[in-house]
Amino acid sequence: MSTWFKHSFWRNLVDMHIPDWNPLFMTNFSATKYAENMQTAEVDTSELYTGNCLGICFWPTRAGHMHAGLKGQDIVGPTLALLQQKGLITSSGSSLSAFPYENTLFLSAFPTFSRTPKRFKSNATLVV
Image (tube, rainbow, N blue to C red; front, side, top):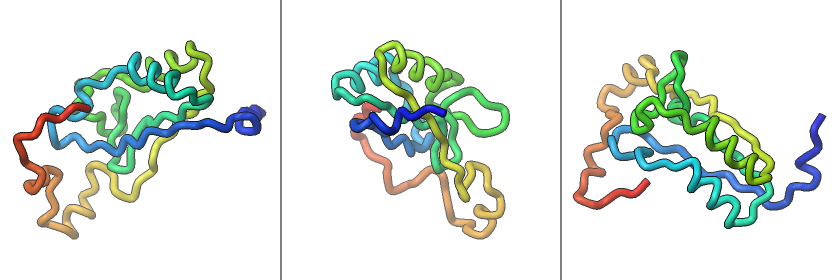
């Protein structure tokens, strides 16, 4: 059994609860830049989300819903590999959500719910 947690004191987890109702979200994700940022921050362990509480995955999957902004690109494998090449300890995980992407029971209970929030429309430039 690994005991990395006994000597890891500078960990980082980037909150990636990013929906995909906006087609620009996650389109500019760079595994290289992510790994460089972790190295710059001098973290010793990088914890990477593989999926979020919205039921959206960050790798190609037939069992779930992949983030539309990634357009089929796996970001989990390459990001973990680059982090490990830089000597960081890696950990990955996913949220097991009571709100999966296609939850028909939820949608039938809340018929006015929309995955495309109208109140967030703006002309702002988004960099993700």
